[in-house]
Length: 218
Image (cartoon, rainbow, N blue to C red):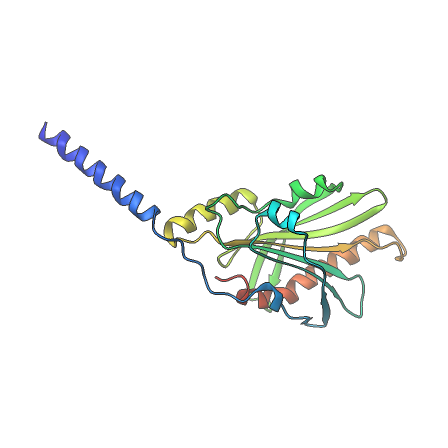
């Protein structure tokens, strides 16, 4: 009987400690607003596009976001979207492009993961590369989940890291980074146009990544 009482007491203490730990206030890291993202990035010249409508922002439950257009001497240009969530505890969570894009009429025709060297080759990140099509229009998309310094391609691993971050650091902040380039018809072949678009999103990722730490905190 004494052993049972001791075990029960330990279980109750462990449960109380877990509840106390989980109920601690969430840490909101200091960062720069996405509106401060540089307009010049290693040869790319940018301009800000209109923000998403209030209806879309409310649906996404995003705390900060930005839409940008970047171009350089060698086409094609790219568009950039970053959506930042400072907390995912209250029900707001990142929406996967594989769910959102089909809802907007885009059909994924190619889906793979690629590795990209960033920070002058000092780090290699794995991201999603997909080709989407709507009628006669095709686009190449790179996207990843950015969670407390981690680059995560898998939506499911992103959820796991969110839980781990909440338990270990009392943080659930994360972001979706998405880069798109249209496959233009002015190239000599569609295959070459697709390769040019893929090259553009990869090279822009390499230009963008070094500045992200100020806006998406580690």
